[in-house]
Image (cartoon, rainbow, N blue to C red; front, side, top):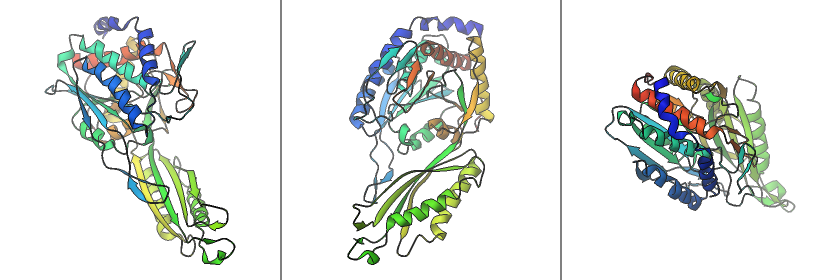
Length: 406
């Protein structure tokens, strides 16, 4: 491993260039619904990988649905998945994953980037345009090394990670079957710690329907969907605390058109988290059981849309072995790599569920993601690129054992 470190010197002195590249990309708004913005980011990002010898393809999003404001289930519009690859006949392959979208819509006030001390503040600087820069520079370093011909890469950039990857998960699962190791470039914590085991997650939308009526003239002819939704919410809340590590968060509720109208529609959105597959099954069984067994009021109907979309990601087996390899590479670079379980989710959940040993949070170190205080630590750009490049070289050179698939 010490010998491999000599091939990392090409990354020295690149901090300012990496920060500038992240700044340029972060200034292009790419909130998930902003398909034009995502296309502009792709047009900026893909050529920099093609220059390294990768072939790029644009893959259509998978069919997915959502619930509109009228309570109708309609097609979900999402951007494509961008696939880059090299050496298609290589006997071993690494899948690198990132996303081009952010949580900030085009009209959000957080549309600026500035460097303050050692922190680069901006939308997506950490999550994860900075991570894509780290990925690219690690690959540039690896491709210039004597080990480049030993392995091949598939890279996936999706457009909808921040909203659950509903239209891109099938593509992730497809390529997870073709590869031997997964590396995902979500941001690490400020102290450099990685996410270990990840919780599973699900999103449910409840379509509660009643009967509209004039609130004064014919109140008793109406059936209030908001009241039905309140009964539903109360029933769901009773599930919290019944099983350790299972949480059910009632995130939004929308219903009614005016104070003098008995509401005939109310939409309730629920997010759930659990630490194990049995947790997620318990949640799903109980949520769906409520819909079938509870009485939400006369002439009140409840329809459920959605479910579990992020499987749990346990830190065990091949994934744990890969974490240990990353830790040993960090030690070679004087980086103390630790990891901790998290309730957050990412595309690494889906890759691991498809049997691929996967480490995520290999991007820049940062904090306050999904807020207007988001930042990436300037000094983490080069060190994280070196970490990834060393892992790649270690696998290619046989210094790191390829982990077993799940």
